[in-house]
Image 1 (cartoon, helix red, strand yellow):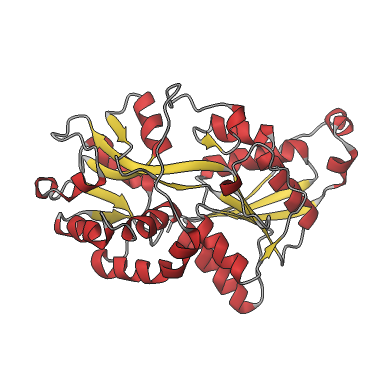
Image 2 (cartoon, helix red, strand yellow):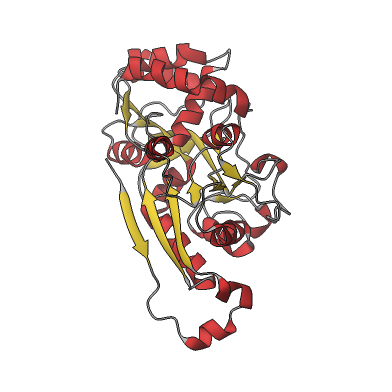
Length: 332
């Protein structure tokens, strides 16, 4: 189980810097508890960026895969003791479930100028911070260069494919829910993957490693991992299948039970600001506020075609979809 719980604090913090900060920033204090599925490095950088603006706030981070984060939170709800102020995870479906259960706080004053209206909840309970798409990665030495999701169904790829498990990865759960509903792919796609002895692993990082070394030369993978690995010399290519990519927006929200709502609102404001969006860009993601620029790996003029997604429809079947997947592939 990959779980990290840490308290992040910036060393030093001179009086001169504190005096230069706005009065509102100086007023924020106390502990901010963040539950996130971000990679550990990204979570650390996000906390440091926030604390640069709000040095009086102590940031405590619990980090794991989206499914495990949500499982921990569900247990805390059941015990009547939810700990997090902020939930910062991979998929909007989980956020929709929490919104339905009246677990999320409205942040009406959040500044969403420049964001696509589909990137955030219309009632402003959660906000997409970036765009992470999922497509096909393959090793340059592989015999077939796939162009379609259906290419992974070909029998000649038997024993050569890996994918992140939707039982652990929020992005993978979205991919499962979206593809399972398509008439051209549907569950026959996953049945073909099973017949091809595809393995489901705990996260995208394991898929990338397997593709990069050629152990499993094909993988279902998130975009930035593949492109960043390629930029560093890894023999990995990324394909946007002709049917389109699935996507998550890595949304952030405040829980109604948050103990430090002023700091929680400031945390969201930071993520949606130009500074927060530029941080996402520097981490190799597509920023939700497109005006801040494009990641270095995305060629000028190139777009990433997305599959349409009905969040409510995916939410309605997500537990049944995961169970059916687990029955087919087992638990990663």
